[in-house]
Amino acid sequence: MADTKKLFIKTYGCQMNVYDSERMAEAMGGAGYETTQTPEDADMILLNTCHIREKAAEKVYSELGRMKALKTDKPDLKIGVAGCVAQAEGQEIMKRQPAVDLVVGPQAYHRLPEMEELIRKGKRALDTDFPEEDKFEKLKSRPKAKRAPAAFLTVQEGCDKFCAFCVVPYTRGAEVSRPVDRVITEARDLVERGVREITLLGQNVNAYHGEGKNGKAWSLADLIWELDKVEGLERIRFTTSHPNDMQDDLIAAHGECKKLMPYLHLPVQSGSDKILKRMNRSHTAESYIRLIERIRGARPDLLLSGDFIVGFPEETEEDFQATLDLIKEVKYGQAYSFKYSTRPGTPAAERPLVDEAEASDRLQRLQALLTQQQRDIQDAMVGREVSVLLERDGRQEGQMVGKSEYLHSVHLDAVGHKIGDIVKVKIVESKVNSLTGALI
Image (cartoon, rainbow, N blue to C red; front, top):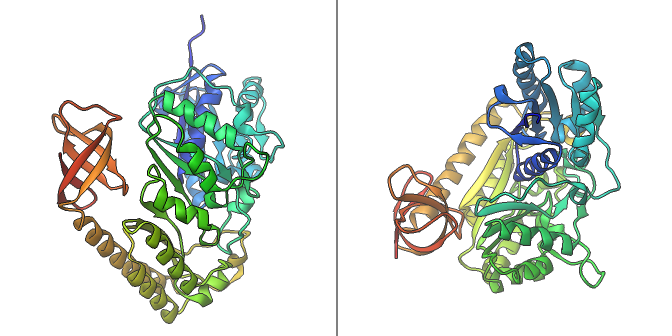
């Protein structure tokens, strides 16, 4: 009997890539592979890439250089590149790095077993199509394994917004939503395997418009209420959202659906209307602030997360100050902030850049404000009672770590409890990036 082949996947970037890597592993499980945590043990290495960060492609080529060296000791090792860099630069990757055996885009990874069969015959394989068939339905799963208590579930892909700085519409394609019944089926499968919390994923998840049971397009709120009926599923989250798609029914769900957690990631990117227009964001700072007021009216204890880009082309100090003013008014419990970097092929790539030193200084000032807000909100949790989903063992005997409703990491002594339990906890201490709690 032949030995099981080993697959090593290195995942870059967003939660959707984490989900995609899991599905790639399942697809290759059907082709006789099991995953390994070390590239040295692997018969196949897949780099699941992200195109969002600065110099993303160059980092992939650097990693490929290291992986190529493994082929010296193991000539039969196969190396593949998946994800958004693969989609954007598939031909170039094949040309620049002969050690790469296959390149597959994020919409075609269900074809991995067929591509693997091809490269085992000594050929190279490239597939960056946007196929007609539903990749989620085509995947051959390996035997259903026990899952961690929190899981991602992709419900929507692609984006039609065409923000001037973003490559997603070019690498992930137009907005496509999965039918409701398929999402519910996958959610039930996850729950049967031990999942208690699901985060619904999409590049623009609140634009979800999947086909519902009545043949009509359902909104994300409709989908959430259907998931609310799934027995054993205790928590629902979603990310990432666009302000323009935050509809009334979704706002209402935050106040009415007990399984929908009081945490919302709603990127604004800038507080300057001039820069927002240059970014093609189609909302203003004022409309965003009024929207936040409405959402908090429905769910007053909501913890808000956001994204910010500083140093966008033509951003002045006055524009930057408008961003700081918006942050001070909104108050964020968590945020992701970046210095603008050019993405070839995007509209903003042709525009003159802000001075590098000035952009770096602005990022430092912005992050200082966001860090202080995050700290203040976290400190204010001391004395409050929260529910914590236990996700893993802690470093100390009897200690466990989990997430509160607000996505804070909480450490606590949880003797007698197990991973997957949801426990009531009183927060007793706020640390740099986590909270300490005591069982009630």
